[in-house]
Picture 1 (cartoon, rainbow, N blue to C red):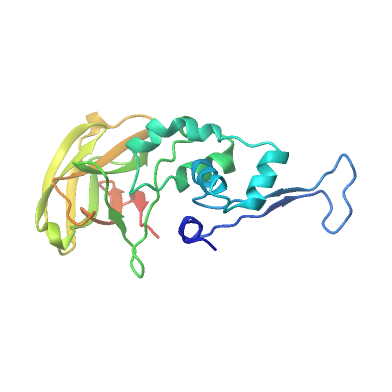
Picture 2 (picture 1 turned 45 degrees about the vertical axis):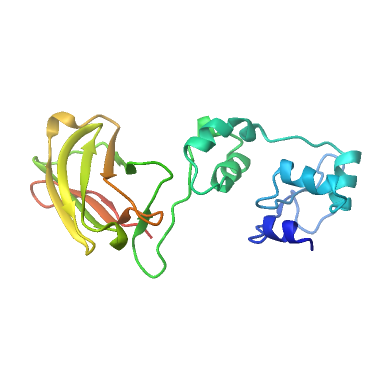
Length: 233
């Protein structure tokens, strides 16, 4: 395999989606077998470059004798560029394949990266300030409600301030250490919205491509009942 192609499909995700009405039965003309094969990272521009060098004869034959073209989601590169993590477009494109929707419709912009062996997610971005966003449902119960967040700063970034916003309004600025910090703040009832609420954690800085980690988010009412809980896998 050529080095470039090996790089392109180094994390080869080959997906076979086989659709037929009767497994093991020979499909009729009206029940044709459909096979979808996906090569993660093999975008059309990369494939065309390798075809031009004569390194992908099979792809070249398939494209010349069949039908080829960019996905509609690929036309959404401006949106993709604004939400990129180190050039990974896979979560955006594969979600378009799975849902049949363009990125403007399905809303998936990035990966969520679990930290192996822990129940936390890494907070990072290609832009500063780094924002972690959590969508909360409509919240109710006996007031006041309390927001409880377990978070820490990425060690090379050192202790830093993290601003907490609810529906774009600041409700707290916490000093977050490199050890786990538990932030407990009263939720202003007047800021709550029907249907859903937008919670944001805005980190003041990042180092080595990381700002911090988020372990859990919870909302409790005055009786201690949990109105919302998020514990990343």
